[in-house]
Length: 190
Image 1 (cartoon, rainbow, N blue to C red):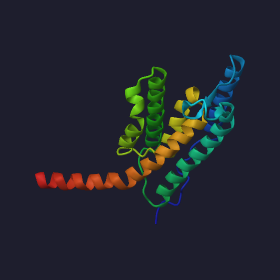
Image 2: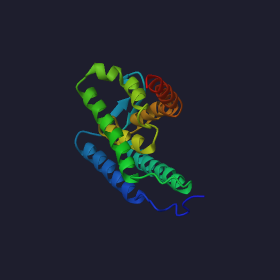
Image 3: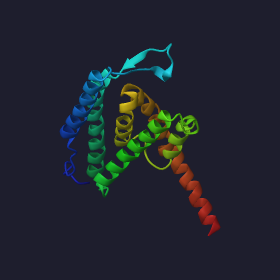
Image 4: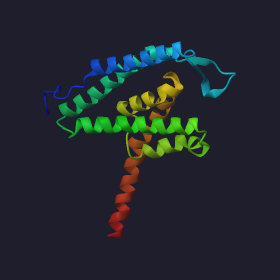
């Protein structure tokens, strides 16, 4: 039926999780000894509860382990079904870097109070999801890592998970419909 050697590609999950754990603990310790670990109000509203970045020391390693496991399961499933996608590492890194870069752009826009970009972030996310699967675990992990220095871990995680649900619907259902309509239009033109 397919390739029974489903471990042909294995992510170094323990090493990557340890690296992320060391980075977040290092950041939290540095913040602790340089003015204190920041807290963030939900939606930047003082009347809403605030969340300490200390929670990121627990959540980020767990998220990393879980999300890398999801990536491995997806690749294993593709291998088992006989579909051997080429360039596993390139795809995984591409989606990870896409999430990371988008998060960094969002952080830069936030720090510089560039409201035209910030006001359109949900729409930009939805447009991106027409082209890449923003619901893939590597994109989500890249996004969370890219935002965690500025916003902590909790808020970016909640934000990206909500948008990833919409991204899943768009990528799985709306995108194929648009591709089909586009193919019909191109066939009529030719």
